[in-house]
Image 1 (spheres, rainbow, N blue to C red):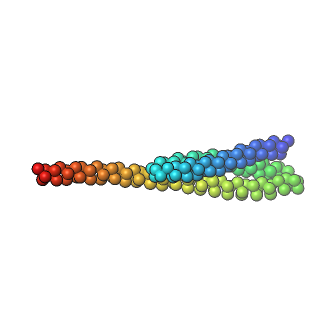
Image 2: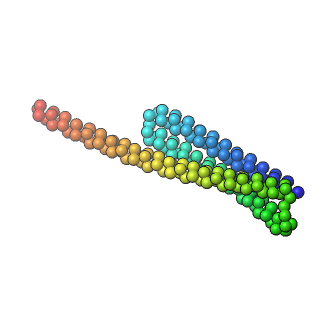
Image 3: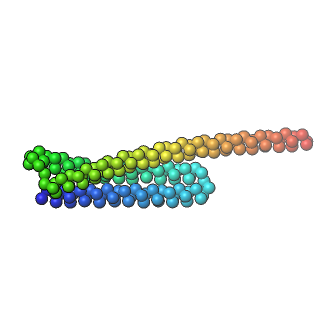
Length: 169
C-alpha cells in the first residue's frame, strides 16, 4: 500500500523533474540559436540584448528544474524517514526495506548533487545575463558617444567650409 503510493508519487515527480530538465536544455539550445542569428546581423547591441534575454530564459528554466528536482528530493527524504520510523516501530527491517533504504540513500545523494549543480548553472546564467546587459549599456554609451563625436565633427567641418568660403570672397 504505502510503498506503492510512494513509488507512484516518486515516479511522477521524477517525470516532472526530467521534463523540466529537457525544457531547460531546449531553452538553452533555442537561446544559442537566437544569439547566433543576432550576431549574424552585425548589430552588436541587438546581439547583446538577445544574449541577455536568452541567458535570463535559461536561468528561469534551470530554476524550474531546481524546483522540480527539489520536490523529488523532498519526497525521497520523506520516504527514507518513513522507513526509519518503521524500523523504530518494528525493531528491525525486512530485506526489501533495507534494499529500498539503500536505494533511497543513493537517490538522495544524486538528487542533492543535481539540485546544487542546477542552482549553480542558474546563477551562472543570471550573472552572464548581467554581464551582457553591462556590455550592451557600454556599447550603447559608446554608440551615443560616437554619434556625439560625429555630430561635433560635422559641425566643425561645416564651420571650416564657411571659413574657407568666406576667405574666397
